[in-house]
Image (cartoon, rainbow, N blue to C red; front, side, top):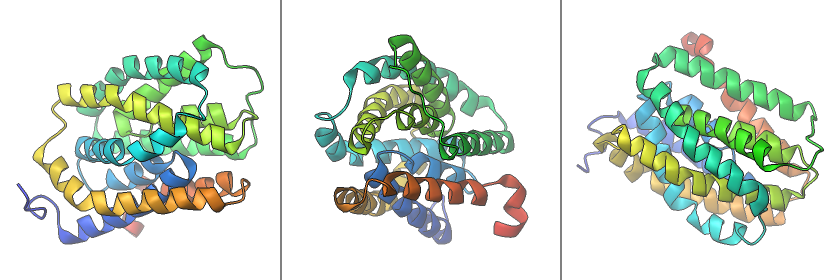
Amino acid sequence: MFDVFASFTPGTLLFLSAVLFVAGCVRGFAGFGAGMIYMPVATTLIFPPTAAAGFLALDFILALPLVVKAVRLCDWRTIIPAVIGSTIFVHVGTWFIATMDVLLLRWIIFFIVAAVLILLISGWRYKRAPTPPISFGVGAVAGILGGVSQVAGPPVVAFWLSSARQPAIVRANLIVFFAISSIGTVFAYWLRDFFTLDVVRLLITGIPVYGLGLYLGSTGFKNADPKLYRIIAYSLIAIAVVTSMPALDPYLR
């Protein structure tokens, strides 16, 4: 059970650990982005359901300290409808990941993350007051993407970052949303038998590096200029998008 090299080579585990560390720093700092950093890269190296389930378990366990602080700042009026939509529609995403071709899945993840990144960088803003149906719809799309790839962030990130809210409130919304919606994803993955022994092996190597990344990122947010909130997260997500493009496999892998 604890032979971590039984399914993954040392080189693969070392590289994934490095990516997890960066993803943890982003998650701790911005409240989102870890899945966008980790999943596009991990799915090029290991079986997508294993990568998704392993990351879900890591983030669900280690991000709990962030949630305790975030519940005092978040806007529950927009979070609750989004969580309901995500919980319902995550099962659609898990069906896709269980039946879809791996290469096609990688291209879909790439295009989704790239498109939302472009939308955010463009400066687009959602200026209206969010209504429960809109929040529910955003959460539904996030649930589908989360079930497919553990990259549930793009819809809700675009939704809340496009508002005029302070970075601390946006960050708190994202942290609480991901924490609550992850419960539904855990149940959906359990129904699909995604939590295998390989996931346990990933947890053994991933918990220390991801936990350290979360701590450093959270500490950095307290002392950072608010303007850095978007710049740092966008830059790292852009790097992950480019390096995970399947067309670049002959050159990067």
